[in-house]
Amino acid sequence: MSDSPATPVPPARPRVGRGFRVLLVVLALSVMWSAWNYVEARRLERAMAALQERAASLDPPTPATGPKYADDAARLYDAAADLAINRSGALLSGKVNSPRLEPLLAEDAAAAREAVDENALAFDLVSRAANVPMRERDSEYRDRSRSRLQLNNLFSTLSFRTRTLARTGEIDAAAAALADQVAALRMFDRLARNPTGSHLGAPTTKTSMLSLAVNNLELLLNLERPSASSLERLQRAFAIDLSHDFNTVVAWEIHLLSEVAPTVPAMTRYTATGMRIPDFTPPLVEILLLPAIRREQARAADVIAETIEASGKPVPARLAHLQAIFDAHGNRGFSIVTPWSTIPAIVDLSARAARNIAISDARARCASISLAVERYRMQSGRVPRALSELVPAYVDAIPLDPFGTGPLRYVADAAGYAVYSIGMNGKDDGGHIETVWPGPRTPQAPPPPPDIGMRIAIR
Amino acid sequence: MWWQLAAAVVLLIATLSLHVATGRIDRRIAVLTAPARAGDEKRLDDLARELGGDRTARAIAEAMLVRERVSDRTAVLTLEIPQ
Image 1 (cartoon, rainbow over the protein chains, first blue to last red):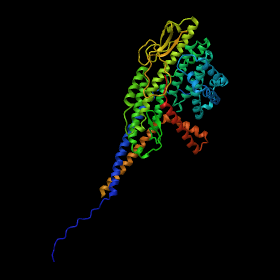
Image 2 (image 1 turned 135 degrees about the vertical axis):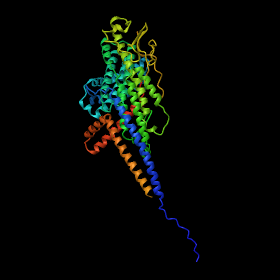
Image 3 (image 1 turned 180 degrees about the vertical axis):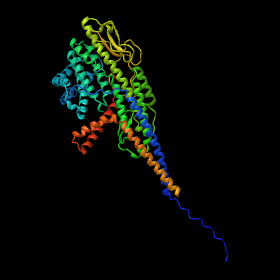
Image 4 (image 1 turned 90 degrees about the vertical axis):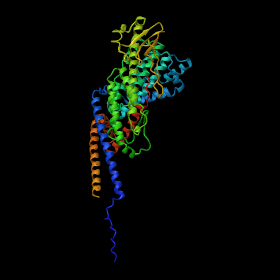
């Protein structure tokens, strides 16, 4: 019997199943992801805490006080807007709203007058409703939201009326409509400053409204001088200050970030030009990218904190600072979290809003002083040699130039006079003003006019 | 075998601990951002009460507010502001 040694059989080692190995890998990846998520959450918390600390230095939006809006004005608006704007036709509307500082041609004037006369009752009711104290029901969400929209539309209706009457020689009636128009803007401002979140679209809308009102005043004063009482009423109306609105914009940006910071928004995507809601949202992608999205939110908090720092500076330094923020963050190219990022929207809004608020503020100050000059001219038969001649009989003090260091500038010659701010280029161009009219949004903002203000021809 | 099991348990515990810690941070962030959202919540309560006050009313109110936020944002972000 051969005694060949048996080949030793190695002891059976417990085998790790493929499934278990996969589980280990998944767990390892999960730990890595969770650690990343934890680190980014800490970063976001620190950034949000720093932002809240900075935000404490912002003046809170003033709560809405005073008269509230009534449902009547809403119904009246619908009637008036429908009658006056829709029936008058786009062609006529285009002529009435033309930027040229000229009267209408005879046949157009007749048609425009007819449109206004036909609707005189509706217009009067609307104008009256705009000054009626509004019911307290406005504190409710639905009323406020509706009121804001309708005030904006009422404002447009009154603008149509102002321009039509001005171009057809009814200067005092046009002045009354313009004063109503500014009253509608004031009511809008009161509603929009209510710090409940429903003011979100307002700061940008208000600059647009104020700008239209100033354009209308420029048209009116260039065509004919209203009576002394109309001038006084308009001067009171145009003593409107929207310069607080940049703080509202910043508060809105904090609100926007505060909504999305605690969780990943399931539906919302932000882009530089607006928000879109895609039909299909892959939640897994959002979950996997959550840490990266948190990091982007922390960066957005840092950007807003820097915006708050800029908001405390005088206008020229503020605009330069905001432009620097825009250049640094506005277009960073595509990254994996771009669809979730609020940063492009925030920096775009800050830069545009600050610029437009400052410009409309400067224009409103110039409008108010131009009206004082007109009152002076009516009394003394000549324009003042310097704005200081208006103090104190026609105005308490000459407002400061938001873009400069001193008061508003003034230049007069035989053809007319200009009250102006030195504008965004920071230098006095001798009252070279170009009226800029509302237009469609373009990717590049139009070049700023050399000086900002109002030029009135003497006829 | 034992060390692989131990590794799995450690990894699991680590993941869960990190989740719990992150959850705590998330709650702190929610508290931090609460003032900015307080107005929204009040409006939501008001609207839900106005619509009947039950759970359905609250769901409808939430949907309405989301729609308004969308329109507000669109207004802010897409509006060109004239001078």
